[in-house]
Image 1 (cartoon, one colour):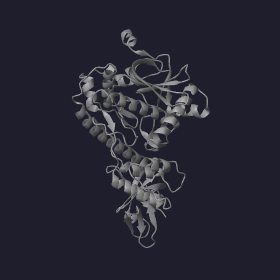
Image 2: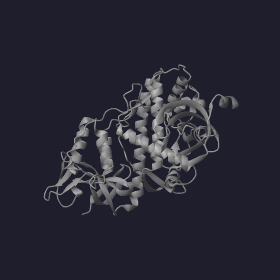
Image 3: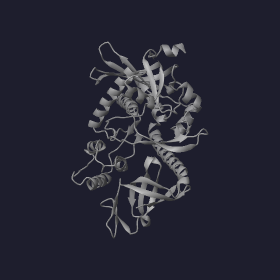
Image 4: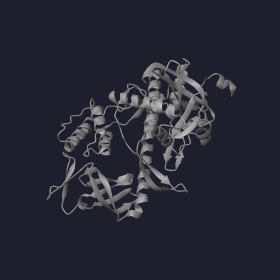
Length: 457
């Protein structure tokens, strides 16, 4: 209504757009660009103001808190909020006036942040709904709708990313797996998507908004931090041992202080010996699990002293709490935070269960799509080694299976855990992590979620 809009910052005239996956329906973040008279640039990170519609203690609020997250499966989603709210009322749809919570960040003409950050309840009107792929096309072509704005956002994001990496953030370059669906919404093939410039562009501004909100709230009252503790020392030693195996001339020495620098250098390496997905898996195994906490432990993986989740209130209840806390902080008000510690524990536990569920479903679909391929051969990469055999990730993200220790060639092999390799007892032939191999699918057990492979010479 007019009264609600009158009490808010009016950003409806700004050049504003959303950038999301092609199948997204809940647009919870938008970006705007304003070129100021003093040659500075003001970037607005506008987040759907779910707290305006979901009243604490209401039936919708209780159910959303219980669900804690929206859960995404191929072709479907179990939303945290009713779809009328998540896809229509709150969603920052193009050409519609929407209520938002905005973080405005000013950059100078050298595209560096100047300490002029504001937090406002606002009203916005998105001009366009972009997909990541469309933004990438505009950036590569050097022309198109909102090219000037997208170009400056991309340059700022690259600057911010570079600075973040030099301050201790770890570069996880992971391609993501998704599924192409048929007309009935059933998966018919796997798509391995690389990270695009557009992904990095959006990610950097969301990270900045989350970081600035955490810093703002840290001065007011107990809040929800997104924390990430130091990595496991033993597993870091394992990573160093592995890297010294594949790069024997480098003499790599890693600890939690220099880990990010060493990994970021490896991730930009052009050496054919460095299989980046394998290095990333090693690093992820060494990492603590990120979680929610009222104690600020910092975020090791991002290299941030304070961090929270603010940018996805349509699909994460923790963000909705952070919106309510920020709303109170902006008005210098106090609100109840008595359940906040229990909430952090609950959200962290639920999140782990959902991640495991999504992983199992994706694995099931991958194996289901491979059922017709039993007896066929595929190239892949050694993704794990144990006393009972080797795991191989098929190229193109098609799935992972096990080559049993007795299905490797015509000789016995043993696992050398000091060198992270399987060694043939007669020939001394080695299989190491990240090595390319050719395998045949022997059998698939969908119920157990297992695929048996054998090595082809």
